[in-house]
Amino acid sequence: MVKYIILILLFTINILWSENIKGLYDEFFKPGAESKGFVNSLIASDDGFITIFYNPANIGLMQNKIEFYFSQENHFLINEISHLTTGLIFNYYNLPALYAGLSWRKLNFVEAVGYEDNENILMATTGIKIHSLCFGVNWKYFYSSLNSIFIQSISRGYGIDTGINYSFKRIIFGVSILNLYANLNSDEKKIKYKSHFGIGAKYFFLKNLFIYATIYKSPVKYIFSTAFNYKLKYISFSTGISSKKEIGLGIYLLINKFFIKYGYSLQPDENINKNSISFLFQM
Image (cartoon, rainbow, N blue to C red; front, side, top):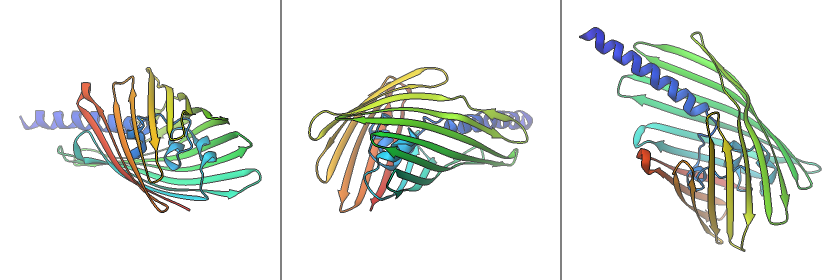
């Protein structure tokens, strides 16, 4: 009996570990309150730090000299699954406009079967803006460790994202390729990730109302999402929906140069929800 229990645990650990790695390095698993509130409709966006995870060219649309971001979120109703993100982006040269950013994402998963899964992405982002055109690249380093009584494993890898956006009057267009190159290596296996493609737009519909739309091609299917953002001087709201039947809501408060953000998304068919609280400081 004990032997069968151990085999079941080993099988469960391997499945969860594999899915966890795929979940984090699947580059549509994005951090931050805005990701939930806009339902991932941020491939073309000038909304600051978090948008570089969708399209690195968005760094060229930042409206401040420096932005510092911190986010903590929980997934799937299980508090033991947490996603931490922190980072900094800045404009360091003006003619042409050059931008850089550093960020760290960590997914920590402590499960009842008795193992700890710790996933990390360290990312450097570089971008350039020439008139209305922006180019950007994410340079990523992956680090994954699994520690249990049955399995100890460390994996490392590298990845590259690239993107472009163009601003024209009241519209921003964006195109990105995530995981243009990406792999993860360990003693046991080598995982090569497929590229993900996305195209999106942001439309300045009215003075305070903005519309977002994104079509995203994952390795297995197309995902369409759209969102609305209503902005006032010190507070803004967002809501969105995607073809995955995911619904999102967000509220974002501005106090001087400090933002407090909360985002929530729900997939009723899968009984999954995600929530995130984030902080952004601008200079």
